[in-house]
Length: 448
Image (tube, rainbow, N blue to C red; front, top):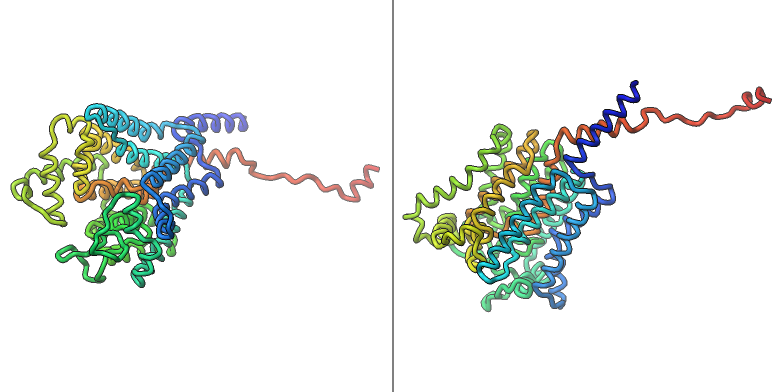
């Protein structure tokens, strides 16, 4: 009776889990997934090193690497079987593909940028939900250790850093970014710290980039690390906490990052507030931001400059230029003008329908079943929705998206699901291992 009851319980649990989640990766699979995540973070730095040594690369080389990473993540995820948890990322990607197709036909211009952006979100989220959280922690630890080491090197000797990576040359070949004839530093043009720009006053000179080679992604990376700390603080060792905090603080201080500095104030407060908030409140954030922008239209219509007011002014003017057709499925001819305005970039890329679908994904894909999940999910939403006020593309960079979405995917597994898996594992494992009987000399002599 007892054995029958145990067998029935295990079978029902396994059946329920098959609809809720896919099988987790093996240890070898987790190491492969860890490698893919780190390649996503580091491959630009590796290619830049090759360019600095004379290798001629172009945009096609970068695109090929990203396609290979994306397909590898997808293959690893599919190899474990699909589940109900995969419906949301796959559905989001399908909708973005449909909107890109409609937009490309309507404007007679092939546009796949949005497909690439949301493919990264989908595949890394799917990969993460199949990984052990220990390997996500390893990924963040390794990435931050390398980032911090290179950042210290860059601060100590910017000339040798520029010579080793040659960021300006790399971005000229692979992105078409023009190199200024008045700047022979070899650094990315965006790292120039001009008069009047925000500064913490701790470091002077060029804004730092570390392994990210440009000044924006490293700022974004610091905030991603804050979201990781917010969700995992209680599980991290002192060494992990120290490394992440040191990396974040040195990035913000040396990069003079406005958004990073702001998030340094918001995230610690959010750590205590987020668990008390309803996830549905996230839905209101972009509408409040856009409502504020249009209510201040008279003040923002002529606002210019590389500060918050100037960026909001850009957003106001760009959104006013969109027509009804653009709002429906986006406008690929307009995308390149929106890089300094995240909300305009989203609408130009995927239209209002796509933007609302993305918002729903941000709200309802991450789980909010415990405090850790809620903190990480709110941190994700605050980061992305706040960043969209000042920029469009940074949150879609594989340098940070690989870590962020694999973390969110992994942490979004159901707590009940994990408890059932552990209980089934214990039930199916023999509680006592019986050793084979050892024949004694007395027993043998007795049988004789």
